[in-house]
Length: 332
Image (cartoon, rainbow, N blue to C red; front, side):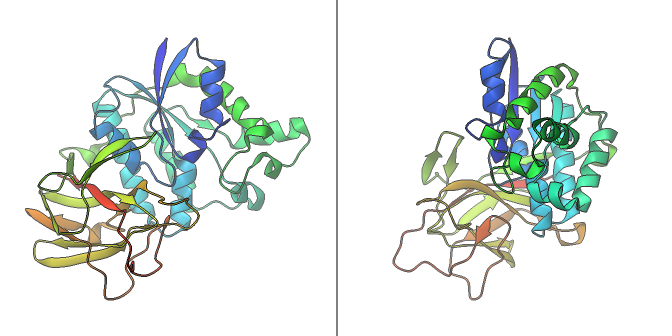
């Protein structure tokens, strides 16, 4: 039996989705570990690998293209998305991970036939890495034609395939047939001499956050947190929540940026979820940490920066914060 590790978005977590169908239909062939986290990007895959949750030499199915296209539409830079994607593949190369990218699409992309620059960039990058890819675009059109229904009918909403529509099962069959073609990504010279580090705040954690998807030591922001490290600050891994505040990041003695940690509307209380904060858009604005950072949960004077899948409803009043900080991602 072959071990398969899934790293993707919420389509990889749906009850009746393609992973569920892969498990049900191929339980005699594959042992599946699902490391997916929704409403996020490949940064989650980087976190999983750096936490040693994926053994060296393993086979990985990557499914974050839909999420990353959504983040691109919401304002995240193409440069940061592709650099992080490249880092994931570079880590896969260094750890001899065999990767099968699975590229899925939103309903608006199918209906409007309009694609952003991320779509072309990730397709080109996958090809340059020497990887086989399952692109669901043509198979979904063929599946809809066979059922004599519009492609839009195969979606649960704009971002998710409908399990009852039948396409997740068809996609699972395509992936099962292609698992043997997963291969180690080619090395990328632009990452030569570089590495990544997860840097946690000093002192004991406030709690261990745990749910069905992951667990991590979390530091609350009631008092300032100090993170020691050296390198370029790419991202932070945090717990967002409905009852949350702001995160103020200072590098050395200088204010870097203030971010909201309030989750997007619609999550049932307490809405505590693993998310990432991206700290850069272009190479010109990457913060360099010489030796330490200070993280504060003080109420901001104005509106903090609100990234995709976050929101800002103002400072909390008479409520206990449910958010927290896990670690920083530094490029060394």
